[in-house]
Image 1 (cartoon, helix red, strand yellow):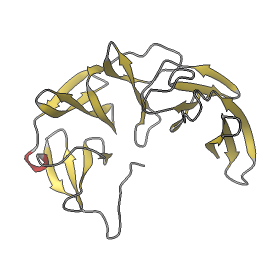
Image 2 (cartoon, rainbow, N blue to C red; image 1 turned 90 degrees about the horizontal axis):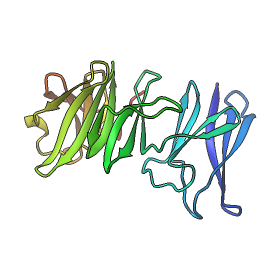
Image 3 (spheres, rainbow, N blue to C red; image 1 turned 120 degrees about the vertical axis):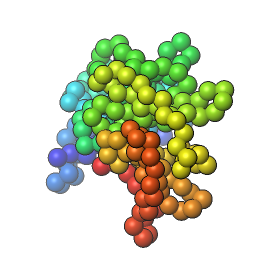
Image 4 (cartoon, helix red, strand yellow; image 1 turned 90 degrees about the vertical axis):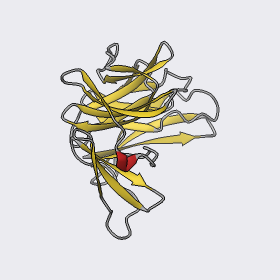
Length: 216
């Protein structure tokens, strides 16, 4: 078992990727990463993969090495620019977003290969659910919409706005299962469980004292 971290050294404007053993904290490997511009912090997301460690910023604005680098052992390669990394709960699968012709596109992540877009448009939040399903939000002139993309069958289902969620901003969604997400209702200090296949909603209060939910 190991942990991974990035260390910023402002005196030299550099970033180092550090892999440590969890058992004793000993350093297994260090790799120097491109920094980009002075003051720019390019590595807000780190994801383990079978091919190495993906180090990426989520905004896609980094000037160094595109937006994402893949570190294999001590070798760093420049991958196609990626604007977001989205791990699937209880899975090793990853989905990524990238820009193409002014649109944001969703794709399964394949190392060192041109991404194959599942869907392109004005995509907002991306919430992988498992079993090949991904919940997406996208904006149009008439407002915010949601859809479910089945990446196995390559089908897309636009979700009618559920009556229980009409007054909520669909921000901060958390995968609850392969077909459900938790939607925060900040005004009422609670969560709603949204079943995206049947498009139904039920109350899902968190335990007393809980302030957030995460997929694990």
